[in-house]
Amino acid sequence: MKRTCPQLCAAYLFFFVTSIQFTAFSQNGSKKITILSNQVVYNSVGSKLAMLKSSFPVPEGTEVELINAKYPQIVFTARSGKAEEIADWERGIWYSRIDFSAFAGEGEFKLAIKHQDAVFQSGTFHINRNGLAKVVLPAVAGFFHHQRADSQEELQADRKLLLYGSDETVDLHGGWCDASGDVSKYFSHLAYTNFMLPQQIPMVTWSMVNTVEQIPALLGQTGTKDALTDEALYGADYLMRSLSTKGYFYMTVFSYFNPDPNARRVVGLLADSKTTPDYPCAYREGGGMAIAALARISRWKKDGDFSSENYLTAAERAFSHLQQFSIKYADDGKDNIIDDYCALMAATELWIATGRPVYRDEARKRAGNLSARLSGDGYFIADDADRPFWHAADAGLPVIALARYLDKEPDRNLRERAITTIRKSLDYTLKLTRGVTNPFGYPRQSFLFRGQVRHGFFIPHENESGWWWQGENARLGSLAAAALVGGRLVYPAGTSSGVKPELEQFAANLVAWILGCNPYDMCMMYGYGKNNVPYMKSMYGHGTGKGGISNGITGKDGAPDGTGIDFKVEDKGNEWRWSEQWIPHTGWFLQAVTAMAMH
Image (cartoon, rainbow, N blue to C red; front, top):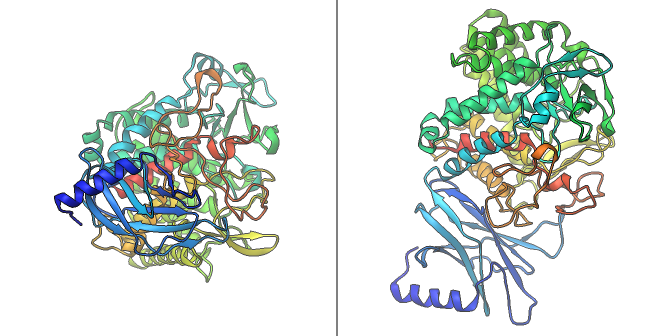
């Protein structure tokens, strides 16, 4: 809503005389409002939401002004939504949504609200056409280049790594350090849990390949096409070195958190950093996504340290091996949902790359398995019994895998089966998310807790790992990507994202949460926004990298079922749960932003 010049001048004068801080108090100090926003950039077209966080219920319909920060003037007026408490998080804190999606201007802005004798304002943020991609693409490319395991210590040690329990050595140099505090390298970890395994270096590589193929024009505009192409080839080269002569991939290069680089070993990993010789990857242990990444990048006809023909040959050899031995490598000796969606990705990419019926048949089988795992309610079943599928990182990957399969599948009946599965899964996610007071639109999930199916915002801290729970920003990125990629297949619409408004808003909520529109006013992308987690130092010159995504917000520390809410930047060494960067977070955030980009 435009304002006249006298109104602009009066508002501008009051704004800067009354308040120059992000948060202000009334004279009696009893009432506080914080304006939470995406602290970095919104796309000019599409959903743009912010939030009032207050110690009292701000009246619904309160005027919130969008102010051009460079040439201070009010350019748009929104109205606050209903003030709501989230009882599961914290009593006495109220949240009111601010929707300024109708504003399509570009520039640098702030949000401001006047209440009684005080003015409250947000930090500055940008609004630009494809603004997210234009910021995130170079940030992510720079982060992963920083994350390369390429110090002299790592390169020398990793060229002659000992296999655990053996005197045999292998050359596994390259790849990316897993986190800002962990210079180990993982195809996956948590293998012993059977149901919690994340996809790490292989998924990141596939993610980069997907982005290079999906939005080439934007990569050109941002000068990041060569950087992401090189980074994807660098990842593929590490996958190649990790393929053993026997046909399986080595799962983990573990540092033992020892400053001596010669302590590094190729291992299988249990809880509490206990290591074993169980290092061959099953489909779910990174093998499936490694095959998918190599098969897909082979179609580029570009060479890294290996040729494109080498990439495809390796993918086919690994697929043939895992068809025989994946179940043997799995800790419980049987497939589950993670094997299904990872094997589906592997078979689909090989089918696309070669057209061979053997890959078509396996892709159809695994897609059918995923559809059969969908419960009557709409959530996936992870095992052969009643355990709901929940995941702290890859919750959107079943839908992404089915959508990629549909890029190739021509059969009408099989397409309808997969599309129906995607639709029911997305419907359930939206229904569950809306089932409680949830102004942020944070995605809720179903899980088995002490023998009963429960629903909550955050993963249960009491789970198969015995210790592992952390912020879930990778989960948010994967679900945002799934909502848009899957949504275009089942709910196409004329919005900027090509999906119905509910899905577009769902995805935008999750991206905004990561970039600062969350209860802790914390931008999780380091080096951007007004509030970041503290820097974390690591070995061999590594540590927190600009553009990387931190773990994020969890359920309350000490709550076994994941209820409540928590975020700590200091916790006597345990602050990694919230503040440490982890490559799946950044890899999935790249996919969310890629899916949101206007092609």
